[in-house]
Image 1 (cartoon, rainbow over the protein chains, first blue to last red):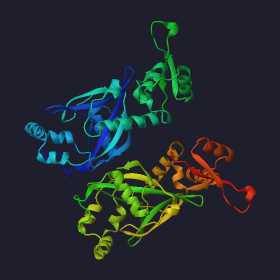
Image 2: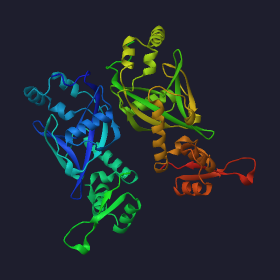
Image 3: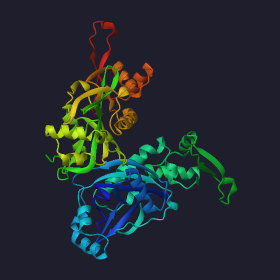
Image 4: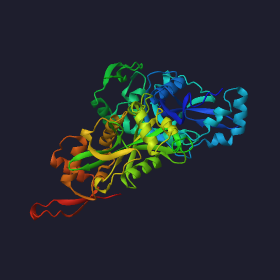
Length: 242
Length: 242
């Protein structure tokens, strides 16, 4: 196929995406399983076309995996150790080659291209998990949401990438008011607090938290949420995009 | 020479360095002038060797230009627009080629390699300007400190790189206590305030500023600075490295 080559893509440079979603009080990350003899897990990733900006490459990769356009995404770090070659694929190279060549997915040139040293640009993305229908990549057996605290051992430095992305998310969550990208359009104050608690992995005092968020002056209060018990019904809020 | 090729360096990936120094109440950036027919200015930069981590490549480039090891440096952003090719060099390509080929610095292959699209990883560095003896790069006519507010128009997106680096420096200055890398080993509180004022390009109230810095509990107070007027002599401080 000669899919991967210097005419199509920049050599030795990749993008890996840490896609965060939030559901049932858990911060989750979308990861792929590649099936060889034993299963190996990876972050969704891809390469940069010669005519494409790195940000557009990241958007394209995210759209391929989530079905969503206009996702909140941000570069967070470049991973560039020379040792970051895909040992897991090297160790399985014969069975991989046999399988991929047999399926006609890749040819020998593609495999040589893929097994070089890559410098990888890490992007993190925040999505409303209910809107995502996860899509398998070309080499994937499955793609699933995992609790950020219960990720399997992934290839190369992908677990480390998640740690750096999570650290950046924590640093940015207040400053840039980006957390609302993880919530559905309307939400209760309790749900905002539970989201923050999941991201920071610690509890917050209810009154302080509520005051702090309301003082940001970015939420619009809507009608009460219908729960059946009218007197205890919490208000719904919506993020007021400036 | 075939200096630049895929055996030695990663293709289409570069590093550009925004080296900040501070002197006489001015935040300065070290930039190079390349002499072709008309002068063009660039940030110090370079490429990543096949066996080298990106951080070590940045350290090597910084040591080449400043003579210093162990510089404070940090990645701040990747610049990856497909349009970022070196138009200035393209426009001057004939005179450049003649000059560089004549001097035996580069050959045709090198020039082809250099004029491709590059994705560039931006690093910023903080140095004690008094310790630096700026060194010219291979293609430089001169290398000099410029006030960050009075930079000439540089090639490609290098002026934009400085703006992003400055924004990151401002965000990090308090949080990470990195400003002291720009000062000599001992300094007065007035000098710290003047540094912060140069970085943020605005004045701070003396008493508040002094209290805030002392409350950080990272400075060690030394003897008074000898000024000749003993009763007004300010204390010297040193950054206490944890």
